[in-house]
Image 1: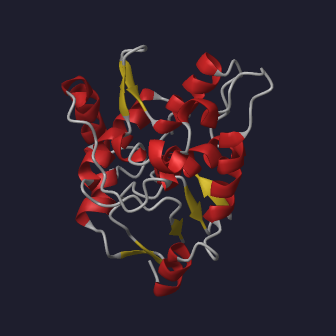
Image 2: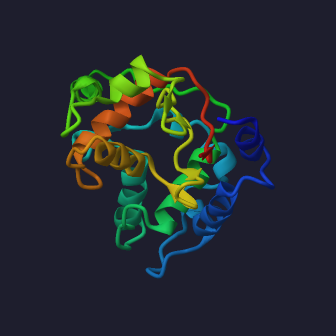
Image 3: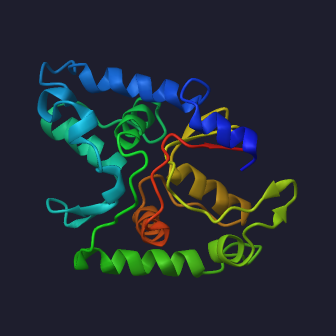
Amino acid sequence: MSPEIQAMQRDDGANPGMLAVADGEDLWTKAPPSGRPACAGCHGEASSTMRGVATRYPAWDAQTQEPVDLQTRVNTCRWQHQGVEPLAYESPDLLALTAFIAAQSRGLPMTPPDDARLDPARAEGRLLFEARQGQLGLSCAVCHDDHWGRRLGAAVIPQGQPTGYPLYRLEWQGLGSLQRRLRNCLTGMRAEPFAYGAPEYIALELYLATRATPLPIETPAVRP
């Protein structure tokens, strides 16, 4: 990142992603139309109860017997405990809530669970990261392991760390999830992107979280 974007990210008054965090805080304290408790009604003060939560996702869900990301966990709470419909992927409310929750862990290192039940998905994520795909025959690893720091057109290729999501991307002029970024990458490789919520994305997120350990959470990060 350029020094200017780094400075924007560090300054909460200049970081445009903080607007979504503020919206997420409002949603956290607002009771749903069902009349059941707000998120805060069960979880209390997010600055303490949600501190460290984002560092541990994706995680194993005992009910569904599969790995879930933070977005899925939020939606499960909504329909199971609040009696309201799940929020759509990339919807402003889901992005705001997940950004607010993840922001409580800013500065803490990524600590994906050491849970053997996650190992198959983690291994699948690594295979997906290293597999050549699409008409261009590229893989995630070709760019983000082999050529990071070089340029692709006008852009510097990053290492592809997932520490800042949901993040504000200047290209998008808005907040977006890691799944949105992965879909963009697949499209750029001229590969067919998976549907939002697909297990392949959860597997990739899990591998990327392991790969990023112990880098700190940056949400809401700012990127070009």
